[in-house]
Image 1: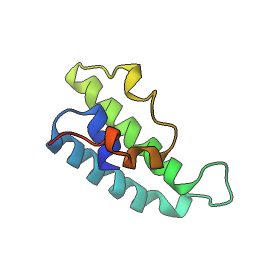
Image 2: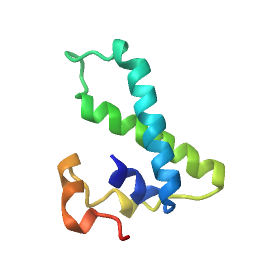
Image 3: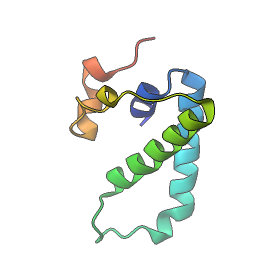
Image 4: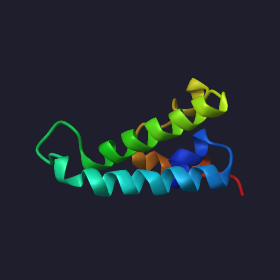
Length: 87
């Protein structure tokens, strides 16, 4: 999740905060998650993280280029070396 968020937010601390807030929201909302519904848990978590990151960017007056998301076809793609953030 961190790698996914870090691709949108250039500051590591911002990405960490968004990840933490994502898991807090997931924990609070887990009773409402429907495993038999249309979304998998991983998709649901990524959606929450994406919305939080986009909100953070809006607050800062920044935008994320669409190309940021283009090469990612699944969560597993994020584990490939070309998608890992540089130190």
